[in-house]
View 1 (cartoon, rainbow, N blue to C red):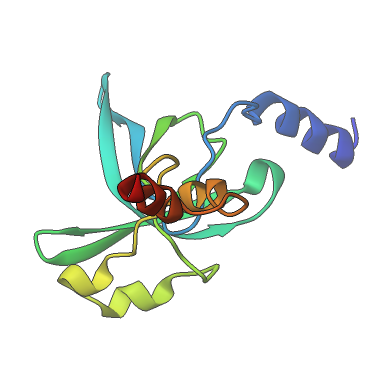
View 2 (view 1 turned 180 degrees about the vertical axis):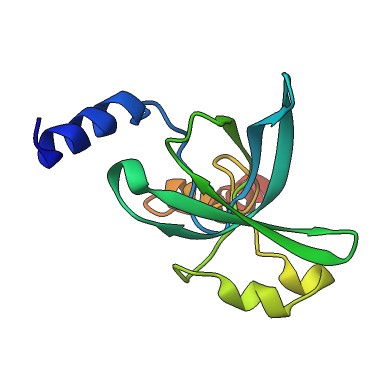
Length: 146
């Protein structure tokens, strides 16, 4: 076996086919396996995704949270067997690929604007439905005249 065959074997063995779709700016809850001596437990780490790096098996994402007034960041490999599951708690709107500027912000200043949920009041989907149709105001005026 040459090096390339070994790398391909490792890539196939550890690559997770099903993964949740999330982006930088989303708040996620990562369930991580923690081994203490002989016992294994699952611990949740919830925070904002501030960066995503790499491709394939080497793909990682960084999650940041504030714990007791101190900023804590952890880098998780997507395909690690220690990452049990990833839940998207909230989708945040970001126009940057890396949110390192959040390191300097505290409290509400570190929050990101939430993305509009489909079907929510004021969402773009609702506005798109009424674009091609005439407004309902003339109908109301016509009904009052009768």
